[in-house]
Each structure stands twice: as structure tokens, then as C-alpha cells.
Length: 361
Ligand code: ADP
View (cartoon, rainbow, N blue to C red):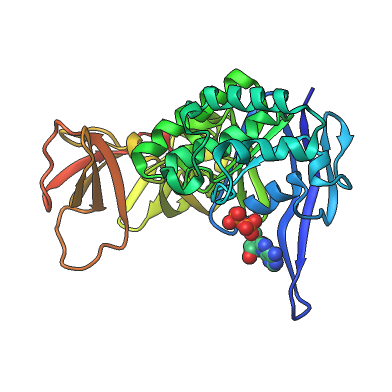
């Protein structure tokens, strides 16, 4: 069994001037056997450092990492039964694809040449690169190099795959294809996988579960739907979803939220949940804001269309409260994602509905 456990894992880097950077701060995650966990967060939040500690490429300042219950902290990378795929692919340019894929096996196992040959051919077939085995990396496209890097991870038949932004050097079309392929591969091989990306769309489409990091701290771990519908805090709410959630700074005054240019009445149970809280943030996802014919509900607002961004079968409509177009930047702009059949003109007045059951406070 290959459950991977991060138990209060912390990494502190010492800078040259004696100061300290806490890159990873007391992170706890249990990754199940065969699970696909995506580690996501903005640049510099500690994703790579976390992955490198699991791989053994970085020491652990405090806490413990366990694989199948046994402590990894002191084990050398080669003893960990973990294969890592890097963003840069890290292929040896002077070696053929076959040599690149065989290298790790020759180094770390006592398998005979025939067995290694067969294992590499099998992995190459799985990745659809069996006809490229005699080429050098320089003679391959980016997508093919990525397949070789994945093939090299497969031949080792590891307990855990670690992937550090493996698709970021590919163009958008290839990336979408490889996403599906990596998922399929991971499912077929049933190997516990930790996948790092800064791209929330990649995280949402690939992960069984997603761990969101910010500034070295774990914000939330959950399924894509949990993160989307029940974000633990404003950071997760804003990070997951594209376009991101609209936020309004409001004050709570006797059952009504008062914002800049609008008032939002609350039903009594929501108001009583807020209790004595005065300052809060109202969040609503763009896809939950709809445009309606006329204002019939207390949660309908007359708004002015600032910008319309066509997205194929949908439009992102940027709105401001009030029914006067203004020459100045509006104080409070928010976005509604609506079906493309409806025509919305810039500077026109429309009624936006922000339903109370879709609001996050
Ligand atoms: P991410 O992968 O999420 O972009 P990293 O794990 O690379 O983030 O970095 C996390 C933090 O640790 C950043 O503030 C980064 O500057 C710092 N850091 C990473 N590696 C080192 C290092 N070798 N020495 C000092 N600080 C580092």
C-alpha cells in the first residue's frame, strides 16, 4: 500500500544574510493509495518545495513524510521508490530515448539487459513512442519529449509519481490532450500521484482531490466540487473558478448588507448566522449572476454594462451598479457569465440578479 502522509511538514530556508524564509509551513495531507492529488497555488506558495521534500531533493526542516507508514525523512532519493517528472523533462541530450529510459533502471536495479530492454519497450508502447526509441531528445517535439519523461517514470514502476508542472512547456492544444492522457495513465497504473500546477483549471479537471497552498500554508484539501461549492476561506473562493468569484466589501446593518452603490437584504436565518458581525465580504460566482428582464426581486439590481467579453458560447459581462454609464472607472465592477444567445450592448442598462442561495459570506 502506498499512502503518502505529510505530517506537520515544514521547510525553512536560511538566506545568505541570516534571515529565514518559511517556504512550507506545517502542512498536513494524507494522500490515499492510488489517489491523484493536485497541489495548486500561486507562484512562490511552496508547491515545488513540498514536492522536492517528498522526492528527497530537499531536506525537511521539521515534521515527517511517510510512505506506506514508514518514515522517508532520512532516505536518499534513490531509496524512496518515487519517480519524478519535471517541467523541463530533464532528459540527457546525448542519450537516445531508449538510453534515457533505461538509465534509471541500470543505476538502481540489478535487472539483466534483456529485462531492461523489454521493460523500456513496454513503457514506450504505453506512451506511444516505441518508434522514437533510437532518436535523441533534440530530434523530438515538446510533446514527444514529455512522453519520454513520463515513460522514464513508468519504467521504474514506482509507488509514487511526482509531477512538477509537467505540461507548462506545451502549447494549449497539446496540453489539453496530455491532461487527459496523464489522467488515463494514472488510472490504469493506479499509482499514488502528486501533481503540482499553478493552473486552477488543470487542478479542477485532473485531481481526485486538490490541495490549495498560499504562502506556504495549506488553505484547504478537498474534491474539486467541495472547493468550488464550499471554499474554506476567501483565498480558495477567489483562486478556484474562472473568471474568479466576485467579492464585495459590505457592512451588515440589521439584516441588510450595505455596499458601495447597492443594498442587499438578507433572509432572517442568514442574517442571524451573521449575528453581530458588521464588516464582511459578499462573494458570488460569475456564473451564478444572471441577467433578467426586469427587477422583480430584492436581489435584482439595475446595472450598466461596462465591457462584454465573448467566450464562444458564453459572454463575460462586466457590470457596475447604477444605470448611468460613466466616463470614470467604476468603484465596483463585477462580472456575470451568461449564455451567448442573449445580446448585451455596452453602456446599456440591464438587471442583474444575485440570488441569495448562491451567495458566499
Ligand atoms: P512554487 O513552487 O509554489 O512556485 P517554491 O516552492 O519554489 O514555490 O518556493 C516557495 C518559497 O520558498 C518562495 O518564497 C521561494 O522564494 C523560496 N525558496 C525556494 N527555494 C529556495 C532556496 N533554495 N533558498 C531560499 N528560498 C527558496
